[in-house]
Each structure stands twice: as structure tokens, then as C-alpha cells.
Length: 183
Image (cartoon, helix red, strand yellow):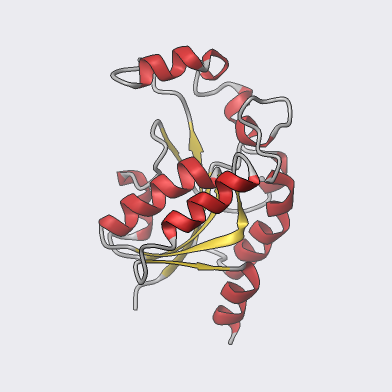
């Protein structure tokens, strides 16, 4: 059985702040579940960050034209991890793509790991990561109460899409994941 890794997708100011056009109203509710999952995955946790591609090529150019607030350098405070996850000891993988199943993450977790996935936004970066990782042969458990969507309806829609991919992708709660690790 492959080693289990927790991947916390993009717990950044740009997706957490109520002042950000991309701030998830669900974000505060995932902080406790993320910490419980991290405590159960010590030494096997990865945090990710999205940053705007520079230069923006192809479809990224009109995308960033539509969202000019996000067209800032990779070291801008907007892309910082939120303070509430800074105590989680984990490598940070930065990518210029919605999906975080990128070579830097694969180098840490291996090519066909079991990923426990949490983070934001369920309906963008989480679903993009999950589908790409499953397609590459990873097994995923998406933690429903540790993911935050752009809206509750969009969160549910993304979970509905990912639920169509068993056994490569399954959905579970934090309690179910931690009980499975401890039991």
C-alpha cells in the first residue's frame, strides 16, 4: 500500500481573506480540520501555493486580464500562506497552475501515493489537483470538511464531480480519515 500524504492546497491570503475577490467564505471553517489532519500526518504533509505565471502565456493572459488584482510578483504578500498554517511543518510546493500535481509534488510524495487532500478552492485548485493526480495513478481521499469552495454550492458541485471517480477518488470527513489512521 502506498504511503499516505496530506496535501493542503493553497491555504493563502488570496483565497482566505474576505477582502480578496477570491476569498472563500468557507475558509475559516477548514482551519481546525486541516490542523487535525496535519497532526495525523506529521512528516507526511505538503502545503501548496498558487502564484500567477509570469509571463502569462496562452489562456493565462486573458485570465489575469480579467483578474488584474492577482497579477503580482510571486513574493507578494497576497500569495503568502495564512498565519494560521505557518505552524504546520511541511515543505511548500509553489506552482503557476490550478492543479498542484506537478513534478515538485510528485518528487515528494512519489508517483502513485495515497493523497489525503484538503484546502481551497474545492471548485478550482482542489478538483484540478485531484483529477490530474488520479489520472496519473495516485489514490486520493478528498476531505469534505477540510476543503473550502468559492461558495457552498460550488463546493458541493466539485465534490459531486470528484465522487464520480471511485475508487481512485473517494470522499471522507476529517473524523473518518483520522479514525482510519488511528484504528
